[in-house]
Image (cartoon, rainbow, N blue to C red; front, side, top):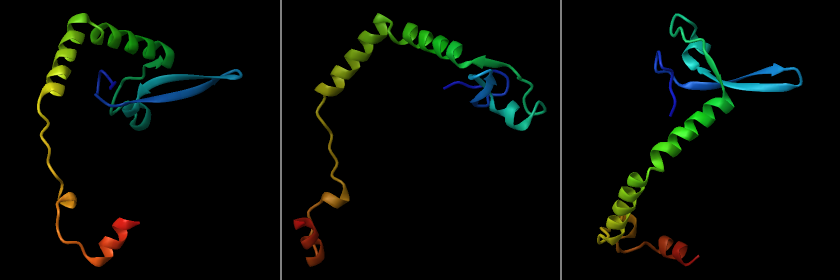
Length: 106
C-alpha cells in the first residue's frame, strides 16, 4: 500500500533501541538494503505517526457519504442479479470408480 516517494520501493519496518524501549519506523527498503546509489531516501517515519496518517486518509476518503451510497447501491445490484453458476469439472456427474465410491461414503 505504501511505497517510497523517490524510487517506488516498498517500505519496511526498522527498529532501534531507546533505552529500555524499542522504537519502530518505516523506511525505504531500497535505501536500507541496497544503499543510496539505488535510492537516496534516508528518511524514516515513526510507525505510530504514519499509521495514524494513513488511517485518517482512508477514513476521510472511504467514509465519504457519496462513496458509501454508491458502494451500497452496487452491492444491492449484485445481490439482486441472478447468480451465474458454473459447475466445476469435479462436481459434474460422471461414472465413479469403485475406489471413489468408497471414498465418498467415508
